[in-house]
Amino acid sequence: MHDATPVSIAEHPVSGPDAGPYTLTTGPDGALWFTLVHSGRIGRLVPGEQPTEHRLAPDCGPTVITPGPDGALWFTEYRADRIGRITTDGAITEYDVPGSGSGPFGIAAGPDGALWFTETAADRIGRITVDGDVTRFPLPATGAFPSAITAGGDGAMWFTLNQGNAIGRIGMDGTVALHPLPTEAAGPVGIAAGPDGALWFAEIAAGQIGRITPDGQITEFPLPDRAARPHAVTVDGKGAVWFTEWGANRVATITPGGTVTAHALPTPDSEPHGIAVGPDGALWTALETGSLARIAP
Image (cartoon, rainbow, N blue to C red; front, side):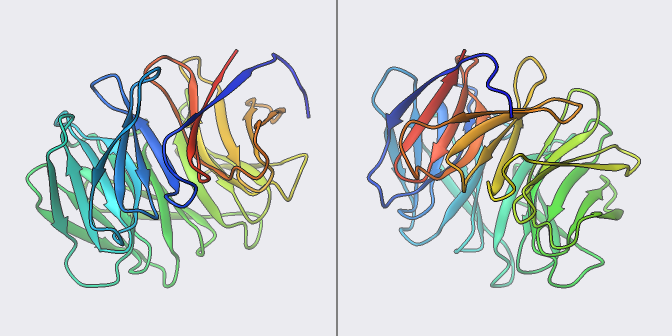
């Protein structure tokens, strides 16, 4: 593990310790938008200003939030089986995912102008248009727990199967391909498209970062700390792959060759979950204990 370029890490409190900042993204308005999974709220933070909150049903469990193709932010309500939309001025619309107990979790904009999401408890991938029309595609697996999803550079969506121990690809026509992981019970969660056309993902149960090419070639890189519980993955403006080590209280980068550089977070046991590039070009991570942390050189 290398301690290369030193970074400065500053925490910005955005909630009480019980609200649970979970994931975050940069909106089209130059603000960070984040989910408060335990308190049922969507938060907004302009770096240097005070955070604001938008209230949802208290027990809806907002999890992943992403910019939509329509200038709004879209998010999943894991416990309420809904997909939510919030405009940059705070107007909220919610769409039910038909059938109960689907557990929508990951969501990302696709190349087709729609949003694609995972249904963790239903072994399906869903698609929702900006008008709220939902289509769903069953996966050729049972109990697979599809989790994070992202757009690949190949015109398809890529997702992790946390319990299915595979990486999946779904084309815009709904065709699904699954790629089993070499390591058993690896528990993949976060996934992001890299600058090299490959997808990078976190194996939370195996303590590894994986890379898959569009044709399905998988490489796994064991972390120096196999108990680190890597969770979320993102790619910064320079093409570097970053991830959170939820169990080890660190954020880290990995090179294409597998060299890991880790940075300890200042507050012990802060539980870093989501990670994203902020409007200021720095890396930001959501700490479940109530802050957003900014990581900069």
